[in-house]
Image (cartoon, rainbow, N blue to C red; front, side, top):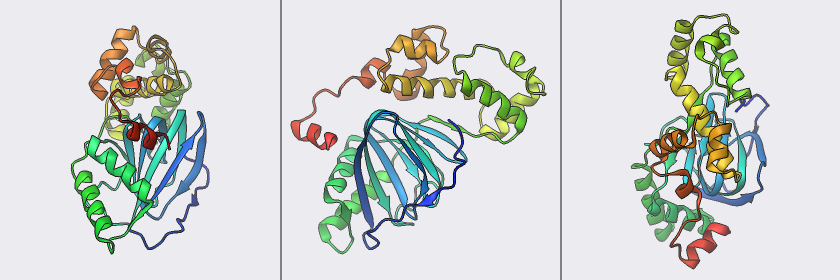
Length: 273
């Protein structure tokens, strides 16, 4: 979960005229896309696998059937946990006016998923073509209703808070209390709690819970059992992890990562290619 420190390159898309262009690509486990940025907004959807997106501002974990919104000109890296089927939409700037100007992980409704897959099958969309114009409008309507999910961590700039964050990221299962961690960073508990609230927008306890949940999600995507993922991420019991997972993603880890039931053959083929 390190910050994006390498020099990012501009990945300029060859199609400059279309309002939306796409990329459909599958990546092996542990593949890393190095730091880069685009001159278009992008919605990156994982139809299989889990992605971790890193920017100078923070880290976002994108589970299967969720997507990450990355505004134009934001340098970022993407790391794969498990095999990842990535489906990306690149939108002309100002096309999705209501989307935030910061990265976020969003839920993908069944309708939005089908629109993403259909757009990728078309490869690009232009408003000059009536059918493609209608598809663009449907996508934008769906963008207006997406909800975000809390699978992100802001990076910390204060060196005292950052030392604690780096200690925990190096050993996510670390069980030391905040008081014990403070002895190594040169600041008291109240100062650290204030810094996390100011810089990360959450308490230290919530930040640590987010770190553990994000790590466990990646382990599950790589094939770990629920018990192994829970203990490796520092949860006292698997049931404690399952409770946190359910609160964040609305279901249990076992249900979330099992193959989707009831898919049509056409849907399965589209997800796989």
